[in-house]
Length: 324
Image (cartoon, rainbow, N blue to C red):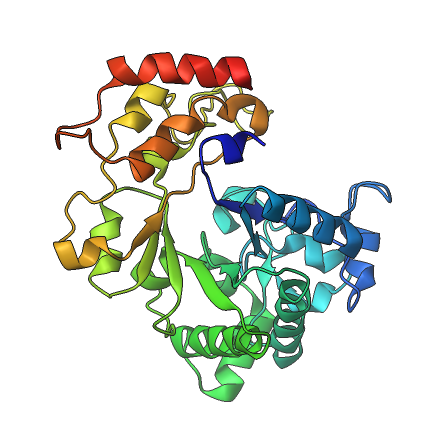
């Protein structure tokens, strides 16, 4: 409901990750059976359709994501042969967050599995879009995985060519169910994979990367962590690392988010590629701060063309907080 109040029109649902697979997929029921935290902590197909339907009533589209090939260790509980460096230690060597484990995309059966998985899940949503993620891929995981290296050598492929072929097949499966792919920025900036012109790229690590993606003429969701990650500054994110921080300190105030210019460093032609933003975090920490990001994209400037003013925004933010 809060999203509709500030005209946020897209809910990015990162529905599974390395730690848990709560999504019941009819084609692969064993994933939730073995990967959910418990039997009652799942989203059934009916649950998904209810969420999509409720969001639609509020004018909100639901972008579902199954991140790959990283963030997939939970798959190893059902298909250990598909995952490289599963729970490898120390985890920080092989992943950006524990547990380590990435899809072994040199294994043809694993690629077929991933393609079928995303098309099956995408087909449950009415959205035109589906995200295959692609962030935080740890290459050392693959370098130290004997099976991955053997399969790579047997085909004569390079890491880059094998990865590109994997993405082509997965995105091809999305095209078969009439979905437009969405990916994280690393797919363009770090791995330079072949993507269709209609692919949407989420800029998240830093706001200045938007210009780099725009140079490739991809449409952009501009939601950088230096402005819109609202979990930043909330303390250590692992829970057992007293000296750690939230990885994206400092805390992002609503005033800081309100100063964001989504079109900075973009040409007038590139500005048309920016589709919106993507603020991050849990409901209890996101509101009412998230409203500031909504207004920067819907309003951009004051009526006279001058920059938005936090002083005039504050009364509206307080009113929104009361309504919520």
